[in-house]
Length: 79
Image (spheres, rainbow, N blue to C red):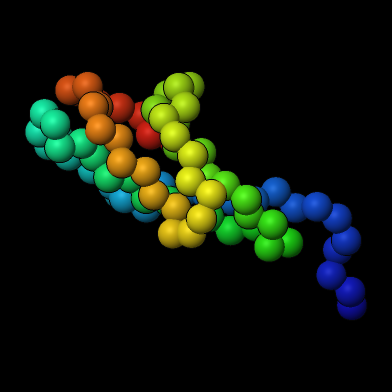
């Protein structure tokens, strides 16, 4: 039986901070964000880091990380 042919979407998820983690952010220190990403065809070219609908940054090489330098206080939805 042959594997299906086609383009399958990549998948990515935030690995640090872990889901529902409450992190204390100190002024001027920032928050390190890391993601695990996989593309079934091996064509992963970047991971984009968002808070809500706002793009924070892009990393084009694994391991995929971003240092958010000035996050506001309060709960933020990373994606």
